[in-house]
Image (cartoon, rainbow over all chains, first blue to last red; front, top):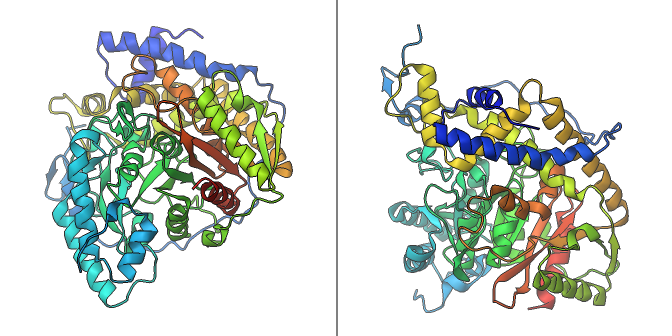
Length: 92
Length: 482
């Protein structure tokens, strides 16, 4: 199928990516090749495929707290922190 | 104790035996591997992170416990390398990406907990294609890993650093992860052994996710026995991974026997068509002659869905990747762009600057496949084709115990050979993706060298949870050609 500019715009919004005009041109060409590559699946006549899941018990665990408090360790990896909170640009 | 033997060229089990016999200490062992790393690293670039002080500290702790006979494992004291998408508490874990360049993991993966409890020493974090997306290690933000046999060639990927480190004796053995062949392919290119276990047999807790329904952490080692020892240690049920199955764990050691009498080996004609290098074909045919001479029954057959595995894989993997990598937004960890205006602009700039081209390519393909209007035609279709492939293999395993194939059509490609042509690179995965799609175990073992001296690997695939038959077959071959 043809990859249009509108499709690329939607894909970039979904992927949360921002591309320059040159990058977008190349990405569009790559996308066309990739989509053509996977479209060979259209050749497969899918009837009703057999159920291939394994028979197994649904494995659940007790809803209990097993983590220790690692708040400080987790905050250490954050780009911007203040008063024990992650800082992001204002949204309201 | 004096170290007058060439420790680094021993297998992991041989190193473990020397340590158990107190002919070698854990500290001496790591010192020898660190020397080897310093000799090789400037050329080969197997490691992203190596903290010598951390390693020696860990070795001293292990040595104290060894003195008290506190370890029972045959791998106690053995230095292992870990692919840099597997979390180790307190160590930098980058996934080969700028996005996680400074991320220090606050916890260890389940497999790390198991291996450290057995007395293994993590010697360093190895190079990889960014987030596991690639098969040459060229997409790593930290440079390519070169092939131990020819520095103008790649080591393969995405676990290129781990495979090359084993081949170069920069570690006794290593961990990789295999989503579409990422342990088997570099193992073949580097002349070492790598096995992708059955999906659900090794915990993914602590593995940085790329495609969750396809990937498994996997051992890479110098021989089959070392792989068995590692898998026996790693394949233990972990309730923190909801996709694990409560199977009967390990004891694959019992499979280390030389016996293929009556084993039925299937040879799919689709894997041996045009496009396969003659050297690779000849070496696998020779392996089949060895198996037949030892009593195996070898038979050609057809797998008609073979050519659809690769497009199905790339659709499913890219779709899952687009979801798994949505977490990288610059808020809680990882890279954040310096200049942005507003929250969504921060997300976009962070991701556009933090990810490399291959990762962005796959995220976009995945986002497209999952999007409204295209979901049924692409993603759902790929899932249904996957089910057809699984049905076909289920039928094949009613007749055969093992399916054999090449790992790749050629030996390791040159660096930059696929630059500008991503599809050509993807086609390398032709032989390996099926095992990931349908969750079966698959092993890559060296089966000789090409006329130019480059390693060739052959792949054995087996039924779910039948790693024992894979190991028995691989071990029989390995001993026959020793």
